[in-house]
Picture 1 (cartoon, rainbow, N blue to C red):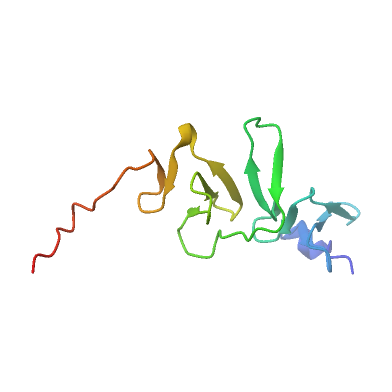
Picture 2 (picture 1 turned 180 degrees about the horizontal axis):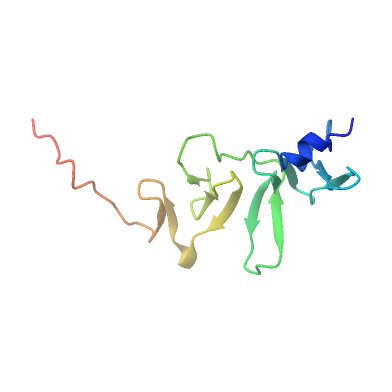
Length: 140
């Protein structure tokens, strides 16, 4: 069924998910109410909430910004906790996940052989000990 009805177009509803394929979506054109099926790129899915294609896999950021690779079997932790944008990667002390506002997950590597510290949410020198000075130790 064509969702590109005059009512939808008048209300500026121009994009729709394609039934049965989360990588596809329908784009409407004004006249004569034509529907065009389009595909998101590989490793992406259609987000009706944001009306765009988003990453379906964790993106591994490479030193060369023009290349991308993906963890196709890694769970995306983004949006699992509200307002949390950084996650440690188990058994990978020099790497972490950075989430964007859309829930896309990007694997990043700490520079200069630093390690990810979940307490301060940043890369720190190896062996650095961080104390919470706001909570003095309890003396019994």
